[in-house]
Image (cartoon, rainbow, N blue to C red; front, top):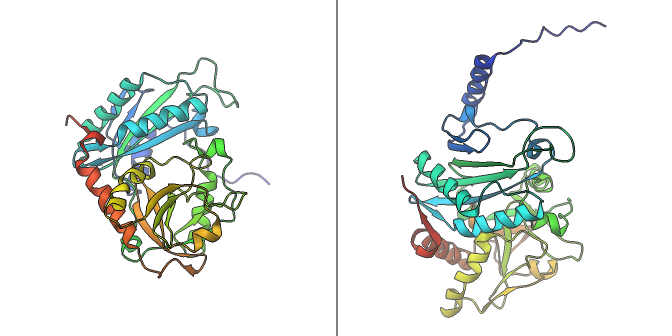
Length: 330
């Protein structure tokens, strides 16, 4: 049977730009500025925030990323995130496009161009464009990209009522891939989609030994019945910068007598389900209580006091922790 599709349009540069702008008008994006080493500068029109289709990060997932928050015109914990970014590059066999300080300056400079004083920064490293092969193209230069945007947002009820989660049916990533912040988030995406299709908020990975892993793009932590703030080991999950900082800040709660101690250890599922509190932790969610797991209540089924205290400590640190804040020359 002969084809009945209409003839394809041959687009020129003006047609492509018009199409990209029309696409963005259909989407509620809040992208303020985008730096591309491939273009050699910053753009503020979301239609121009593009990466070549044959970039190895796009068609093979050979890329890494990291994030940081902008709070009151300053960047929070940029150095910790950038250090993790560089470790991920090494594990992914990705050459750095510049020195650490140069990348840091590009991140800060793009933030300044954006004018955004509250929001988020996401930055990526790819091995570059040039072919559709499995290995990077010969002679390809690494691509470095920085996006300044409004940040991820979550429902207020996650904080006032708490989240409901499930044990995902998808397997946790092998350790090397879990501890590397690569752009390959397929298991994480499938887990969150599965939870939403079940009418829940998120999922939790369990490892082969029956220990708690992590959530979709968040770490998981607990408060035991005897008051210990407990976090899974970081040898098979992502070393969340927010979790690492909260493990330090939580010592203040020990001093105040609100918790009995802080531990990083393997957490069997049975022990986790018996916890007094369960929470999700991350740079975007910060700290939010989990009140139900696989249909069973955690604690009394309400957001916990320790999660609330940790959220308060983190909020204060994000605004006044001078050793953690980077000024932006707007």
